[in-house]
Length: 395
Image (cartoon, rainbow, N blue to C red):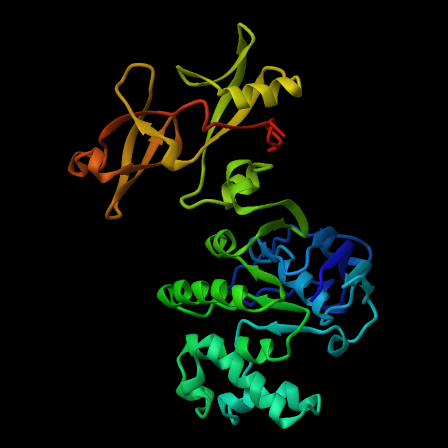
């Protein structure tokens, strides 16, 4: 098996001739303005910038971010399907920038399964081994072993059209693992499945990871997949890495506003606030409410000698509690969503949308209809303090 090292990896897509002039709108149509947040240079569009990452042997790394952030491009560069514009890629300590994809000892699972429709499941899984001219007995052993791991033995004689989406994806994964690759790359493999199947397949991938000794590199835009699957998560935006850490680290200590808003469902609430200091203690002031920060946050801010300033304050919906009118923030309910064990209250506080998660056992949900007045507060241990540029002031 193998570790990976990506050193200052960069990907630039050169300008093409048809990109220079925007298409004219037809009569009666409104010209569409294309917004691109990626950096555009004289060389072309920079899709991935200064990507540095060390992946340990058998580690499960997840690249996550919105569409167009460069995560799939990074994966394809590791696979050899995209040329690396700058930087160095090492697999098992060997520089592989100019090594052909077939010689990198990697396997890739695609979003759209990419199975051969005229072949049976057995033949699909055996095909990459036949290309290597492997012994028939060894091919049979590997295919049946992979089918057993993925619980698809009973489908080996069927063709892909006779399988469900989840079963086809298992076949695609099986075709990859029979090769016993050093690195298994997965590009949004669950995005074509419905919610229930996605949950099932997520569990299957976790089980698979325990059974095969392979390094995983997984791409998704779904932060729930990232949080449940990854040993570490790499959060990307506009071609740049925003933060690398364990799921718990990026949830508890987001490096900036983007990470804070991207990780967590529902999204973190943000308030215009002030960081103030009184009697040597830091506190946050929101409207008429002031909350003293926890000891851990006091230490982090004091160590960096952070000054009093206007800030963006982040608080997760499940960390907000309802209270009485005294020393609380007033809000009006816009929408109340019953989710079974909890209610999601969407409210307006000082012109800001706020989501509050409240366990149903703690309230009578009927009283929180449209326009209902509520008051809420939060503790100093759940506050995330960002400067106006979006950087977390604690770290």
